[in-house]
Length: 120
Image (spheres, rainbow, N blue to C red):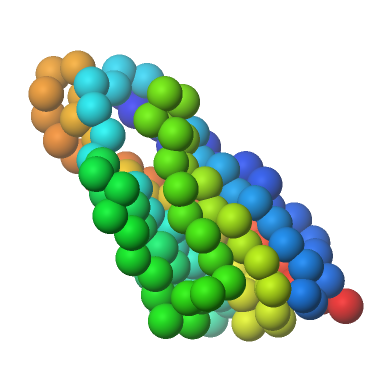
């Protein structure tokens, strides 16, 4: 069984920064793409950023230039550094990863989400 656990969310003022982490644990053989999504209240889930196993990176248009995704393969962890946070960044942030388990089966997994609130 594989689990993804996010951390690092919280309350921050506009213009502030937060760093989210998502750690994968369990019966892991390999991790491929890792991504962040977010969902604001009453809105559809939105793609934020993604990083492949070869560290090819992409961002959603609304966060380009402000957010930075990275990963540490030794820790099975993906990070999201969020700078210049705006009210519109308020959402639950979810981690998603394509994981090959010890049985060599590849499946997509989701974390439980972490709340980010930007408020003055």
